[in-house]
Image (cartoon, rainbow, N blue to C red):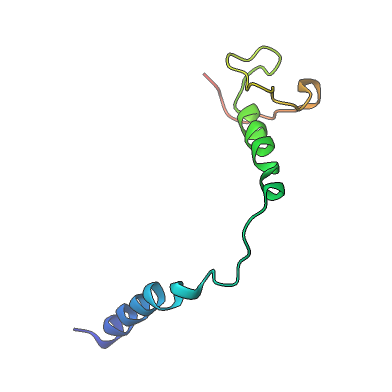
Length: 80
């Protein structure tokens, strides 16, 4: 067996077992305010994939929120 492979396996083992134990020990708990942005970002991502924001097939319960008149979509590939 090659010694470099053995050293690499040892590094992977130590990295995945010993170092990962205390990786998040100093992190604070997340607050609800930090999650306020998540639904908005999700709606924007969904809006990118809609062909027509004025008449979508499925609308989120609170709408997409961005004004469809201000959304500019640049498609550089042939959509069929």
